[in-house]
Length: 78
Image (cartoon, rainbow, N blue to C red; front, top):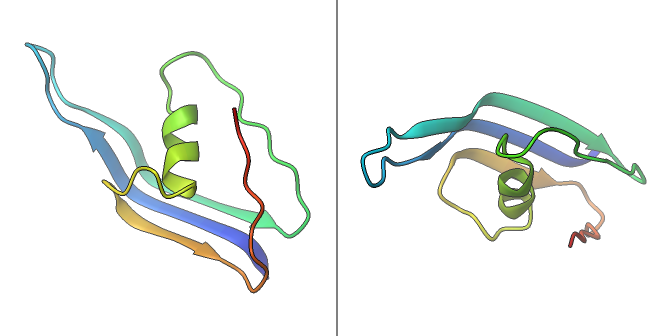
C-alpha cells in the first residue's frame, strides 16, 4: 500500500493582468511508498511548490484527491 497517493485531475491558475490562464497539472498520478524519500527537480515555474502545497493541504483549489495510507505522514519542506 502507498503511504501517499496523489491524483490531480487538473490544477489551473486563472488569467491575470492580460495573461492567459494556465494548467499546471493534468492527469497527474503519483504513488509514494512508505518510508520513501522524494526529490522534486525541474526548472522554475513547472509546479514543484504548487505540488507540495497541494499535498500539504495549503492549496485546495484543484480537481483530484490526495490520500494518505494508514500511517500519519511526515511532511516537511522549506
